[in-house]
Each structure stands twice: as C-alpha cells, then as structure tokens.
Length: 230
Image (cartoon, rainbow, N blue to C red):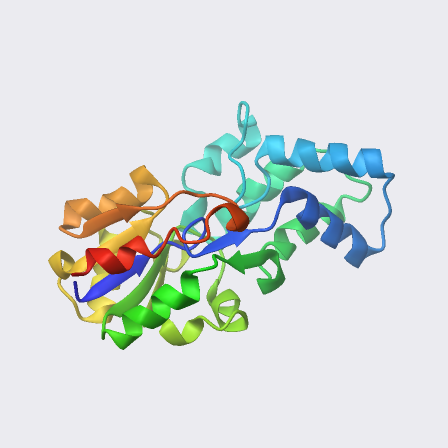
C-alpha cells in the first residue's frame, strides 16, 4: 500500500461524552443546573442524537430534521441545521445554548485521539506511506489535528462539506487518492462505518474497519493497520 486513508470520528479521534459536552457549554455560559437535571438533560441529548460523533438518534427523527438528515454532511449549513434541530428537541435554560453546544463540538478540546493514533501515523510516515483523512463532516477538522499534534502526519484532508459529496460515494475517496498521488488499488481505507467507509471498495481500495468505542476501551485498535501493509 502506498497510502492509508483514515476516517476521523470513531477512527482516529473520539468526541467527548454528552455529559462532558453539556457541562463545558454550561460552564462557558455561566449557567447552572441542579445536578439531577443536568444528568437528565445530558441523557436526553444523547437519546436525541444531538452530539455529532456521538450516539445516533435513538428514536424517530423529527420531521423538521428528517428533510436534511441524510444529506447533512454535504454542507456546513445542513450539518448545523441537522444537529441543532435534534438538540432543540431537548429544553435548555437558554435557546442560545443549542448553537453553543454545536460550536463546542468543533473545538479541539471536545476531541481526544485514540491512544495509538500518533504511533500508527508516525510509523506510516517512517515507512513512506502517505496519509489522508476522508470524513463525512460539516466543519473544518484541521484545527483538531493541529492542536493534538497529528497534523504533521496528514498529507491531504478530504471533507464532505468542502466537496458536496458524502461517503460512500466513491468520488470522495477518488479525490483523496488524487490528492495523495496514488492509485486507488494502492490505498487502504480505515474507518468505523461499514456502509460509509466501505464505499472505498467500489473504487478498488482495500478496506479495514475499527470499532467506534470510547478511547479507554480501544487502546490499540489502529495497530493492526500496520500489519496489513506488508
């Protein structure tokens, strides 16, 4: 393999818990909630699927969100509308907190790299293997990589909202291969979503899946990638 393409959320990084997300936003806004209410609100937000990169909606998607849900990663506007639409199903002390929650998940502080991410990315660079990030997302994740010291390993970022194309559309993977100067058959796609990331196979890329787990529960999920390169 001449290149490895990585998904972002659930593959190289993991979003904070819904409770941590809510606590951070309330603290920034200097808004207090009684502890039982805070815990209940965080649980309701998680059930609603309001945290990008977190749990999927547990129930029926509201009508006002359903129209954009399947195409939410095609633009920044659609992404924000989808997730703030889910968040607004849960009452908060101030309506402005819904946008504040969305803004929080775009900050580097809301994300943690998996424990073996730097090790694996560094090993790939030592082997001369190019690295790309291919993500269905509605905002610029580059600052997350820079803040956590992983940007130096990445040769290309291909983000759905910047191209108006979502995985599993093969064109997004083709864009990444072109950016890295490699043929699709010489690239491996690593991700956590069988449908979205599996779309790379249609282009001729190899595909390897990891489990989308909390950071503490997946200390070495990326290391097998190195063994796949021969």
